[in-house]
Image 1 (cartoon, rainbow, N blue to C red):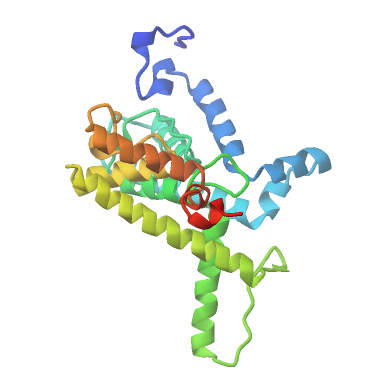
Image 2 (cartoon, rainbow, N blue to C red):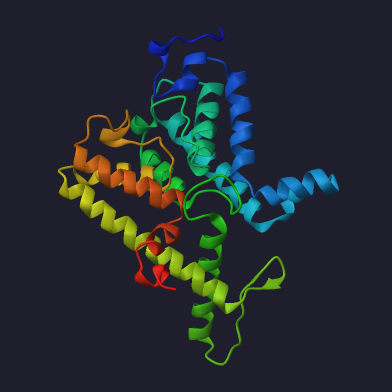
Amino acid sequence: KVHLKPTISSYTDNIFAYYNSRFIEFICMIFMLLGGLNFSLHFAVIYRRDLLAYFKNVESKIFLSIIFIVGSFAVLMLYLNANEYGGFERVFAAFFTTISMVTTTGFTIGDFTYWPGCLPVLFMILAIVGGCAGSTSGGIKIIRALLVYREGTSELKRLAHPKAICSLSNEGDNIPVGVIDSIRGFISVFLFLYFFLLLLVMNTGLNFYDSFAAVTSCISNAGASIAGVHHGFAHLPCSTKIILIVTMLAGRLEIMTLIILFTPGFWRD
């Protein structure tokens, strides 16, 4: 039965589970996917009327592959362990949660913090990676992670073959060195700030697992989380909330925009 007029008291962290409608949740999954893809691809599909544009782009193919692989793994883990989901509901819950976390949308239809094995932590890692560049997703973005991975493999080739000339390319175009430097710099600052904020949150009294869950959820702007903050942040100390406010701002502004405001050179003529 579909409930279309929920009262305020009926709202929970699992708001979509309240409606108990696979149709509503399926529509939500479609728009989460669209929001996690590069919006230039939407333009290409509409303008060129080429639906295959989504499958020709390297980043979108990796994005969809991640959803398929992690979603399938989640289905397998739920199947091998006794849980409240059965049959088609198991598949639906696994892929809904996977799409929600990788697109950092934060919608849930179940409390995945109690799911078996590494699934809770794996979903939080998905939120750190995020969706495609030029999308509504938070996180590092897949294209940045991809280019850094390619740079790593290129360095390994240089070590094996010192005289080899290795260049990075994407979609057939060579990537300028300046672009690689900026991506490397962004990820370095992201990781440094992430661990710094993690230590700050732990210093307010939270254990490592709760701190990891809170900082990861906020810096990726995913909203949904695990461990001691899977039902929200209302019970956290005020000092912790202040740190997490800064964390959310840094994640949404992609860190560099926020940090540059505190550099003296930015305010000089």
